[in-house]
Amino acid sequence: MNGPTVRIAAQAKLNLHLRVLARDDSGYHSLETIFHRIDLADDLLVEATAGERTFDVADGAMTPMESNLAWRAAAAYATHSGWPKGFRIELTKRIPVGAGLGGGSADAAAVLRALESLSPQPVGLPEVLRIAASIGSDVPFLASNAVMALAWGRGERMLALSALPRYDLLLMSPEFRVSTADAYKWLDEDRALQSGKGDTNGAPSVVLDPVSLTTWGSIARFACNDFEGPVSARHPALREYLDQLRNSRAIFAQMTGSGSTIFGVLDSPPNYSKVPKEHRERVTTTKTAIDVVPPVRVG
Ligand code: C5P
Image (cartoon, helix red, strand yellow):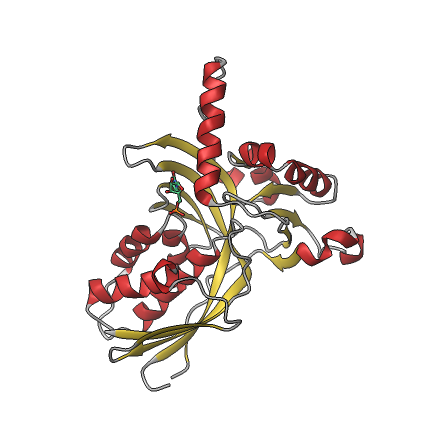
């Protein structure tokens, strides 16, 4: 390790509320969502180098470099700011992949925050968020200083909110995974069918009053995820898992992102022995975050 280096925890996110709105000409949908950070995090070491670019994953499982969001974020930062020319990234993965927890986006966002903290000439938060938005819809929130935020558009417009009280979480990642592209496709297919039957498919009118965004109990009353219906129609086991979680003492239970992880919010640690044996290896326990973990300079 020779260049300036930081270690950073790439916190995952939950979507407490997720409405998929209209699809624009580019084929992408705009969103209305409430993000909340959680303690579960990947661990990244980010070093600025003179030119060499490397990326290592602790368990060796690698996706092609160019499609790796953290790599793309580092390359985009280098292009926009001119510094650093190179980077060395070491990633230890803990967030389940392709699970709706924003794992890849969290890594990308953490790399942006790490490089910004190291840079002799930081580009500033608005520019960091602009780069983040070019990487993906979850990246701006995870690159921001917000623990919780209401976000809309493609996730690049946000209203930062105070963290909700620290609660326990049970995450269950089913045996099947859902690709983001499939989830949007299924949602469009189902909506097209419903509109053929005369059903309304728009999001119902809603007034989000600020007080209802301050407690888990009040958020639970309007929490929703538009992907839950289309995904559970293709994977009926998801409905079963959700019913089990909803019949537990969870304050609320829901799928996050485009799936397939479901989460239950609990007011005390989950009792592992009550989790059915066959599901235990798919269950992770963690807590909701109360702060954004800052990068730590290690070199
Ligand atoms: O963001 P990502 O490239 O993972 O998205 C995969 C696909 O999901 C996109 O090609 C698009 O079809 C769909 N998508 C969308 N609206 C979004 C995000 C993704 O329609 N806001």
